[in-house]
Length: 90
Image (cartoon, rainbow, N blue to C red; front, side, top):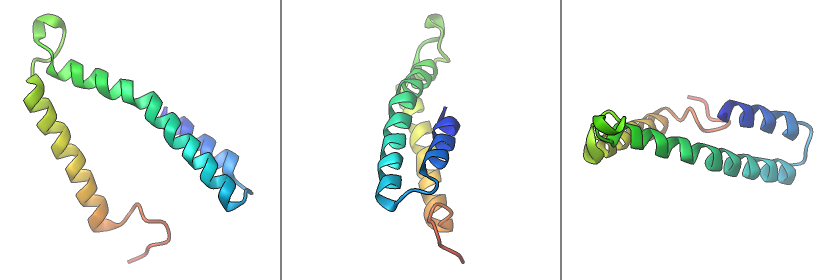
């Protein structure tokens, strides 16, 4: 889903003024947020719910720590490498 939104952003923002690209980017962000938030919640529920209820039974603490480690690792990686900064070169 995020790939489709990203592709749409690049398609619709080509040959546009900067303020139009910002508006398209903002709309793309909110679309991605709205569409992926339920997916994240469903994955979290699946990981944390008991096996009898169809989940993996990891519990909320383990699931929260796993997400925290994953997100923190990504933030630290991007901070160190600056791969997400447009126009930055080492």
